[in-house]
Length: 449
Image (tube, rainbow, N blue to C red; front, side, top):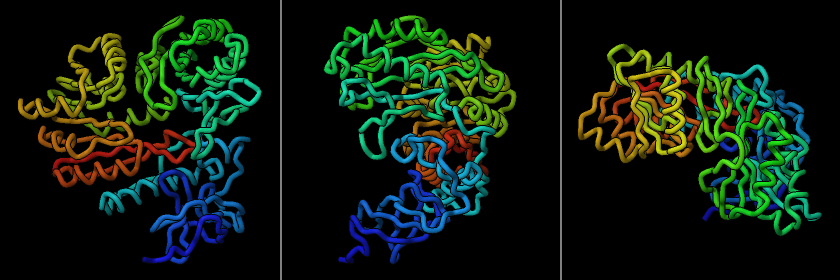
């Protein structure tokens, strides 16, 4: 058995040369890969080792010996403790370059795909205050007050934020108001502990937002908190409530406490109703660029059938419908399907059919029925589509498949599977949907070989 060249607690000095999924910089020490939190490619840094595995180690940069030319001064006072952002210490132009390298490296290492051009990620004019959705965690401080913020790196400890520079200002206004109101609507620390979190959703176009109060059960303070938020913040279109058990990632559907349960956002000239529980792209200006790319690259012609699997509220499907003979969407979230149907009616489209089903359950029936399909859009969750779904998509024999992915590793796995099924990727474009974080959206086109 090979003895690792480092142990937890060691301090080593090494050059860092690339960025890894997760936002850590990567270097090598005596042949072992070392992933360094808060490192920047191009640095030479002293790294404290925190974890040692068989083939790699993890650590934290304790001192930058020689800084990379890509280094920048993080403007957020919480950077380094809050886990929401990972790349504020890297210049924005360099972030776009490194995100493209993340996609390229994943394609080559995981997907076995080489020779495909990967341009720099499409950036934004201002990489701040771009998020339309926030999911704040709640905790009770030692003084008994409510803290609403994001978790510290690799822990469940909630950082008490002064401000978050990537959230829409309305989300931050709601967060601060809710924390202040809890002192009066919930009388004791034990009662306040029932508040588990707060979610916000903001329309950039309308300047209106929704707030969802997440609690263990339905404590008595929910109605008072909701009314207080609505009174203090006129731009809140509605306040909702949902139940969750402890740290479970799952919660109940939202219930409207006061006001409306949805907002209206505008993307690329099209208006979309979006409810609090519906998935919607988190960066509206960049979402418009993704919609434009998908529409151009899909090339849907008259008489053709376009299918959007994981269609959400219809973000990619509805702009394609006017050209197509028939547009079909599949989505398992009843909230998103209700929104999509409302958006279809708003646009007066008569050739759209929506199914509230799981993608993996409806596809076998379509294959058996030999459904006509010309273009397929795939916008799966972070875990990707998987081989079973993609095998059924290939059996529908579309001429073109477009894959929209928010994770380089699952993008690479899905593109590898599609290549093996006769649909190799022909072009792709990363889009920086999530500035200051390591996450990157990618639109890829696969053509039938």
